Length: 158
Image 1 (tube, rainbow, N blue to C red):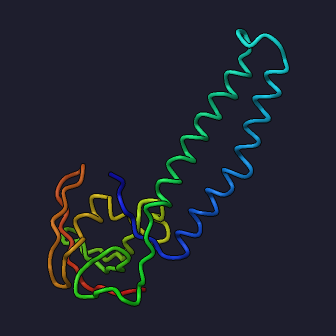
Image 2: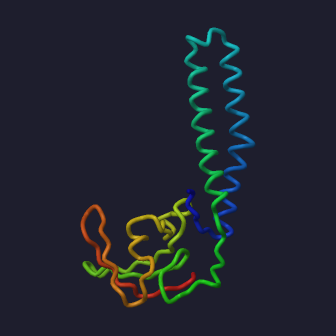
């Protein structure tokens, strides 16, 4: 059973653009590399041919995974988000109770995650720990370095 993921329209467009690029540009390039290597003679001792076939296999695997993600993607209307609790595409302001640091994150699908821009995956330990929590609650999240406690300060759409 495939997992449904929720995306913004922009995030889904990026995924589709990447898939189109892989199909329309990279796939023909890989086929050409195989054809060129095949033309160089004996395939049993042709490392270039073996490398091109392996690269093509990796490309096809990536295309297959992206096709599955796109097929199971759903666009979420952020204007309809329930702001009473943390959900996918919620922006949440949290306070680390051990050091008092405040952080602001948007919870997104795995492929949209980008820590530098404040987007964390709902599949990450912190993302999972924040889901369903309400403002004022404390989320206790088990991470590899131990237990983190975050107070939910604010939930918004931005």
